[in-house]
Length: 244
Ligand SMILES: NC(=O)c1ccc[n+]([C@@H]2O[C@H](COP(=O)([O-])OP(=O)(O)OC[C@H]3O[C@@H](n4cnc5c(N)ncnc54)[C@H](OP(=O)(O)O)[C@@H]3O)[C@@H](O)[C@H]2O)c1
Image (cartoon, rainbow, N blue to C red; front, side, top):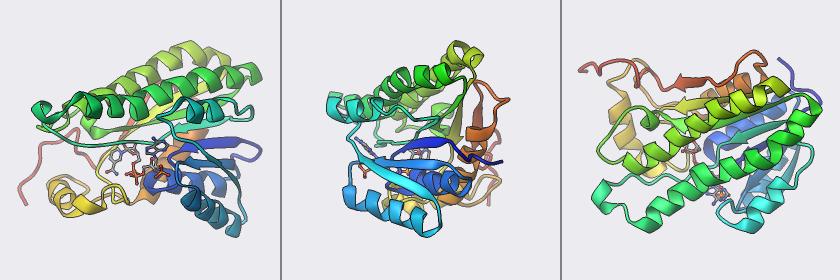
């Protein structure tokens, strides 16, 4: 599948899954807009894509601020929007204060909604486009520390289905991916805990960001899919853990 001639905005592409998704989309021919808060990391990702003969440009934006959202919402050439930027903190309900709850909502739910609100109508006016919302296995499987994070991502999955109904008839494919534990800079500090969790499931190991990126690239080009949430979680949402 080629994405030649398409422009892709991948939020949170300075790190982890987003970085790998930016590289995967560029490798398939898309012009990629690399964005995050860290200008040095964005420049490094752009340089890597260009070194591999891809095309990329950076836009620095903090999705928790009005100015950051405005900068991205103003883009006129986005054909593929990957709402990947994520803020995740796992905490019991009694330890989830309002500031944490609000931060989870701002980056994981409010920002994707506002970016879609601004960018999808421009895709619809051109008659084609794709949105991939990055969710988590914790949106459908309860754990003792995921009430707020899981609820926010479940909201993003709900938006995915509504946008499929709203914008699909105009040629925009809106889908989501529910990701299982993946080794990224964001999870590096808890990698041993996550490895222990994944051992009980069919995949039996953590994902590599490139594997999740491959599925994101598939969804970005699947012009026959609407409103799906693809579980790329190593079986964690559908099987009973096996003792190992
Ligand atoms: N890793 C996992 O196990 C896992 C599992 C399920 C779902 N996910 C989801 O996958 C996505 C990526 O996770 P990851 O592990 O790759 O994360 P990561 O390595 O921690 O990277 C997070 C990315 O989000 C960006 N970001 C965070 N807050 C931002 C803000 N306020 N404004 C703009 N950009 C912001 C960061 O950019 P800067 O640093 O440049 O600001 C960075 O590029 C998230 O949505 C996460 O919920 C991850």
